[in-house]
Length: 224
Image 1 (cartoon, rainbow, N blue to C red):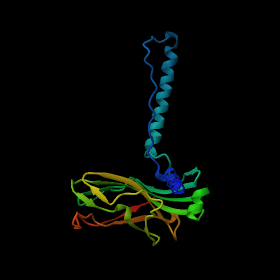
Image 2 (cartoon, rainbow, N blue to C red):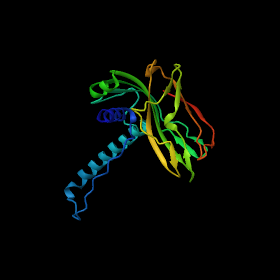
Image 3 (cartoon, rainbow, N blue to C red):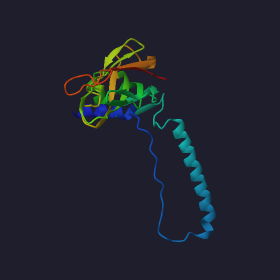
Image 4 (cartoon, one colour):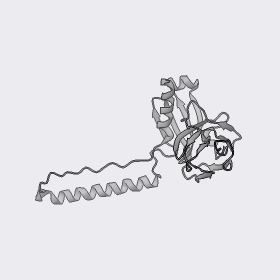
């Protein structure tokens, strides 16, 4: 379990790529009056800080709020992980009472080391990461398996998610609940740099009597 946790942590740190957060400003409130001799200097410092904050904000906006950009490599105890391509503008999918939001689809490559390389019995992997946010909008118990998605690629591969690396998303949604997690698909015959698009196929949700409540999801995500 320790090795497995390390793998998930390594991949998560590399390309789960949480959106950038903002730091809170420091303030003082001791009630004392400011030194009049330092008013001008303080105002200048505040102007510089405001300018820096504005510049950082513009950079973050330009980077779409992601800490790691396409082409960058992140290194940690699990190895070196390079983000090859990303699409973070995937259209929300709906089928029956279920809503599937995909914050990002990534293509990445990794040079593994240590326990991670030992567990996977390889030092090199190429993979697709799909982040999922799933919501049941009804009060009913719905069975839906987005984590069992099948994907195909422009390179001719058809893949299932790797159960050892992927986050668990339970197939039973008991009423109005939300679940989320990242699914990893290990490329077997392709390089991450070769992936131009990913087709995602997910079976329709079912009610308690196993009746279909919507259409199967079948959509394509372009990578760049």
